[in-house]
Amino acid sequence: MSKSKKHHKLPPGPVMVDVAGTTLTKKEKDRLRHPLVGGVILFARNFENRAQLTALTRKIHAVRGEPLLIAVDHEGGRVQRFREDGFTALPAMSALGQVWDRDPLLAMRLATEAGYVLAAELRACGVDLSFTPVLDLDYGVSKVIGNRAFHRDARVVAMLARALIQGLALAGMAACGKHFPGHGFVQADSHHEIPVDKRSLTEILREDAAPYGWLGDGVLSSVMPAHVIYPKVDSQPAGFSRRWVSEILRGKLGYDGVVFSDDLTMEGASVAGDILARAQAALGAGCDMVLVCNRPDLADELLGRLDVQLAPESVARIRRLMPAFSSPDWDGLQADSRYQHARRLQSQIVSG
Image 1 (cartoon, rainbow, N blue to C red):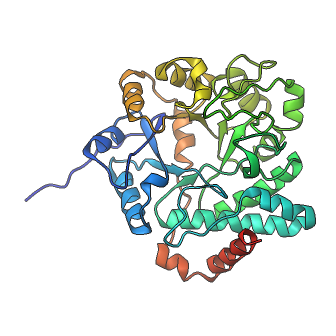
Image 2: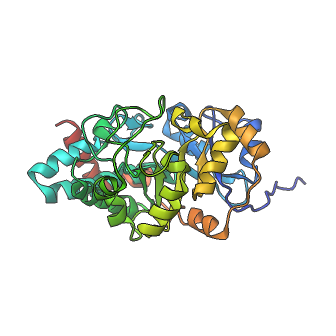
Image 3: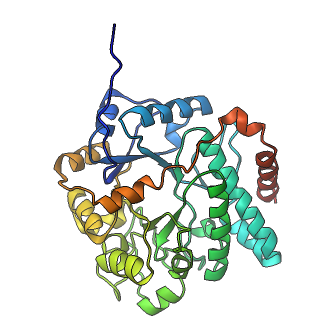
């Protein structure tokens, strides 16, 4: 009689990694069992169809004693990783901002329904968290933000984001506001360049960072800082800056949720040094979890060199990101009239 394999229950670690394809390799299973790993981020390459995605997330959740957090960048518009086999085409967030300019109450309702559809479909396939909403302001200059932003007005961004987060919560999903304190004012794309925002701290707090203050009352479960340098505040990008993360976000704004670094393999992170130096800088600044995407070699290098133990408060924060309740499977979701109504509304926004 064969005994079932048991995995030692490990608390979440501070590193989020990715996987290469639509199934897990032995090497990837071993990596996911590393005690420093706390989550997995999925990409479009990990999706073939809903059945395959559900099987993949089930395997990831089962690979060790305590399920790993499974996340994805799934915002709507051009940043939506899963688009086929029944997934709803979600609007870019700027479309909701345009509705706001005509009818604020309708825009908030539509934002709530967008959040609900987004989260319900992901959760039906075993995904725990989407890195959404984008809280950057639309200054009309950013290459990478563009129509991912709700609006130029920080008050409108905060209200629509709160409505979208309510929709996520209806499906049991937490939220992640990004990119603190704001990526919308700079033209450069931090994936490929090192953006520099020369404004004063006063101006940034009054404008771009304002939604974080308004939503930091327990609404935002997690935040992702920008790989942007604000030289009048600190010489380091926000995600590597103790001034930004610990003193301003956690101290001045009173934020107590998870802080994720943005992807440490991006060009905007290169100022901190090699992959170990980048992770140490982010964790030292006050981040709870760092992302290493699209470079399994660097993920393995980091896991082999990083010597850190998460503080109990970081472990507790990360655990709070897991879904608040169980979700229906895809068939159960399709039978839900509430979901079908919300889905039809998204189609109307997308089609104009």
